[in-house]
Each structure stands twice: as C-alpha cells, then as structure tokens.
Length: 124
Ligand code: HEC
Image 1 (cartoon, rainbow, N blue to C red):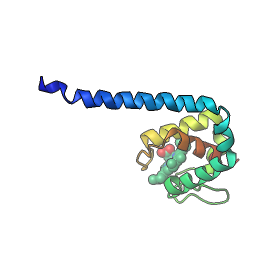
Image 2 (image 1 turned 135 degrees about the vertical axis):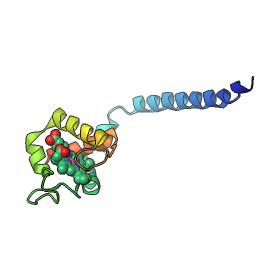
Image 3 (image 1 turned 90 degrees about the vertical axis):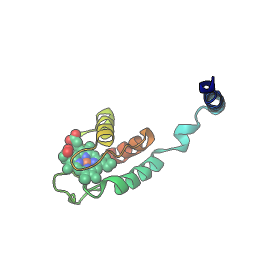
Image 4 (image 1 turned 90 degrees about the horizontal axis):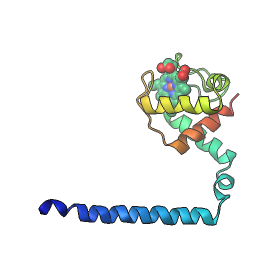
C-alpha cells in the first residue's frame, strides 16, 4: 500500500511534538512563578507601544495629545476611556482577526494582543 508511507514520518513528527510538549510542561512545573515576574508590566507596555506604532499608527493616534492621521479612527486614549479589561481585549481580538475600516486583519498573537491591551489601558 503506497498510501501508508507518508503517514509514518508524519506520526513520527507528531510523536516528537508530543514529547516536546510534555518536556515543556515538565520544565514549566520546575519553575512555577517565572513567567509573570519576567514579563512585567513595563516590558508589556513597551512591546504594546511598539506594536501600536507598527500596526496601528498609520490611522490611529497611539499616544495622548495627538489627532489620528485618519479622522475616523478613534485615538487610542479615547479607546482606553471607552474600553478596559476583557472588553478591550475582546475588541482588539475582533479588530485583529477580522480587520476593520480599511485595515486588513493583522492576525496578532495572543501575547501581542495582551501587550497592546496593557499599553492602551495605560493611556487613560
Ligand atoms: C487603515 C487604517 C487603520 C489601521 C491601520 C488601524 N485602524 Fe483601527 N480603526 C480604523 C477606523 C477607520 C476605525 C473606526 C471605524 C471602524 O471601527 O471601522 C477604527 C476603529 C478601531 C477600534 C474601535 C472598534 C470599536 O469597537 O469601536 C479599535 C479597537 C481599533 N480600531 C484598534 C486598532 C488597532 C489595535 C490597530 C493596530 C493593530 C488598528 N486599529 C489599526 C482604522 C484603522
């Protein structure tokens, strides 16, 4: 059966993935509190600002005291005043996944979206 051949290396790769996953979990368990202390708010703020500058600043004012380049796009301090916490993250996820206005989907990862949310939340 020639059809079976490609499956063998694939299942080998899957097994490798599972093993990597398992050992990654084991490593996590070895140092439980590491993540939040290493990626503190300041790191997130800076990452969020950088993301906003790269993906959003062509239309939105991404800092206080400026007008948006696109008048229709709400300045980020205005967004910050309107949305916080989970509502903000949800809105960012929608905007990133689906695109909005003339913006194509940015498809940011979850960590990036969280960084952006931390940054925007800091503006109000
Ligand atoms: C091409 C221009 C453009 C870019 C780039 C852009 N936006 Fe927007 N954005 C708009 C416009 C225009 C609106 C208002 C109309 C609308 O909601 O479609 C808007 C609205 C929004 C809203 C409000 C949606 C709501 O619920 O009212 C959020 C949140 C937002 N943008 C986030 C972002 C983020 C985060 C980025 C960068 C990752 C970004 N935008 C990049 C043009 C843009």
